[in-house]
Image (cartoon, rainbow, N blue to C red; front, side, top):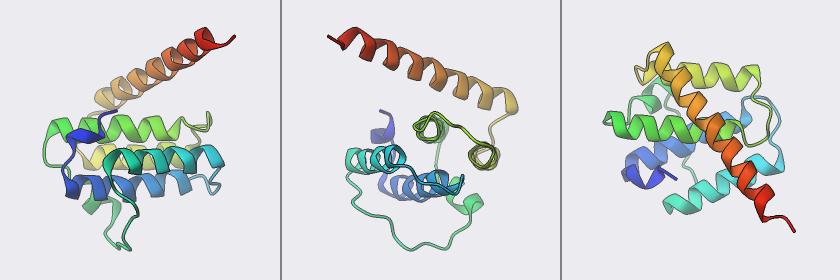
Length: 130
């Protein structure tokens, strides 16, 4: 949804962080893999590179507040894909957000927005059922 706001280096960093996100709970379910594939397609990124940069280094590649918020919104959305936002994912997002210099209040605000968005999407899908 917001990934078009990222430049190519930010997109590559996002993919690497997103891959870490879906692996954070030790289980990659089909929905997570499909969601990541859709995000890559949205960005025009076909695959990730073998990159050894740390989470801190990747998190700091986002150049401005807009790109940092966009990335964090999308990472939270990915975390909620499997409806189980587990401790490993929570810790990873907290680390990424802190490295992006978000306050605790801002992190909660972004997560709340994503939860509201997920709820609205579910309601919309319910409206579409026969």
